[in-house]
Image (cartoon, rainbow, N blue to C red):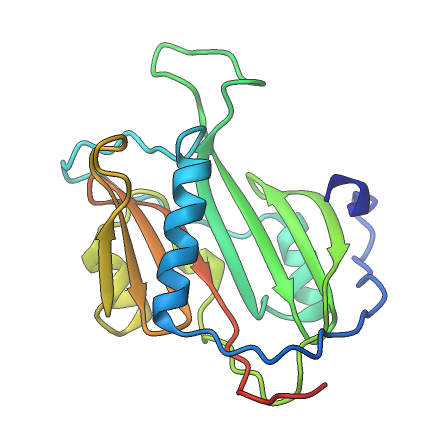
Length: 212
C-alpha cells in the first residue's frame, strides 16, 4: 500500500525495512495457480495500462541496463530474489504525444529473506516496503530483471529462461486482442501483446510445510 512505501534518499545506500513474520499457512505455488492469478491480474491491469505497440511485426529490442538507483540496491543486497517488470502507459499523468502515450518500465524487486521490496519506474527508485520473510528452503529462479526487455519475442524469452513454456492462454480475447500469457514451470510468467513482451514475473516456490 502506498502508505507503507518510503522513498529512499537519492544517493544513499538503501536500507532494508525491518523483517516481519511469515504466515503459518502452508504455501505451495504450482503452475495452474500462477496461471489463474496472472489471468486475473492481467485483466484488471491490462485494461488500464499494459499495452505495447505490438502489431506482430519484428521490432528492434533495446536491452535494459540497470540504473544508478538499481545498481545501488544490487551493491547492497545482490540481485533481487524475485521480481516483476511491467511495460505500461500512464494516461492519467502523461501527455499524449505524436506516437501515443510513453511506455514506462515499472519494476518491483523482492528480497524475501530480508523481508523487503523495492520499486522502480524507468529505473528511478520510487519507494520500498516490508514483506513477509519466507521459510528456509524456498527456491528462487536464477533470473535477473535486466535480462528482459520490452518487445522481446516469445523465442527471445525462451532463450533467456532456458525452457519452453508449460502453459499458454489468451487473456480475455473478446476484450484484448492479441494479449497472451505464458507460464514457464512454476516460477516464471510472461505476458505478450501481439507476440511482444510487455510483462514478466518470477515467483518463489516454498516447499509444502515450510517453516520460518
